[in-house]
Length: 248
Image (cartoon, rainbow, N blue to C red; front, side, top):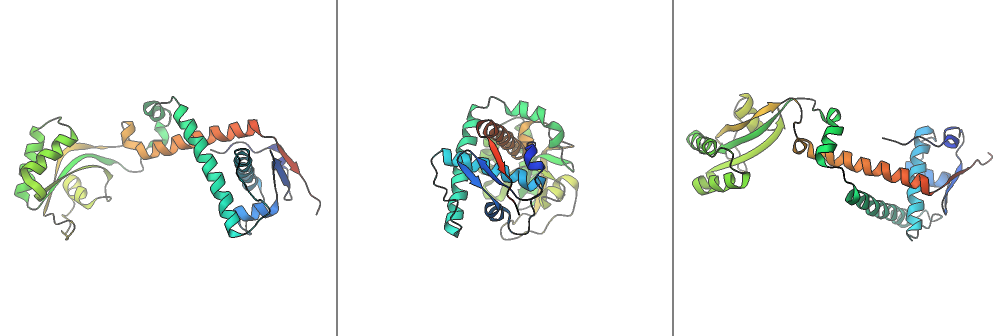
């Protein structure tokens, strides 16, 4: 989520210079960031403000930005300086954040909904159907045994002839699950996947995530976005943004 644009930026019809902390940037910096085809509008100027804030933070941290140098090496050095400063700040914010994955899951539950139902559970892949049946029966008898124990027992009993796979996939994402769970045709075996049988061990089809682990990647992104918004809010409090409208 983007923060509100500074009022003076929203009113800018021509490209202005702006000063943030000890950093002053202008049209060349804008073109360096966005390219020559992007015109300064409310969105691009807001993003440019945020870039200037990050530049100011990098300068404050002691980075040598060489803003007047437009060489490729200087551009890369500036980008790396900003990235390094930001990553350090975001990591510090994340370490100090007391929000738990469960709380994050509750806060963003609606935005974590899947576009299609997913199967959450386990299947076995085997070199023949007899092995698949035996492995499936054994695993079901093990009940609530942990994943490590289940995998170890499969390896001890069947070796490489059987593989236990834990999945969270929608239909079409895994052809073996499509067969074992949804009854689609058995996929052809290959050298890398020589399986001749696939069976569902346990699990069910979910309409949406039921716990944080079901949306771990998305929660990580949302948590990082939360830290980025907090970081930008902090930078806006620390650095004054001054626009200098230049005559044309």
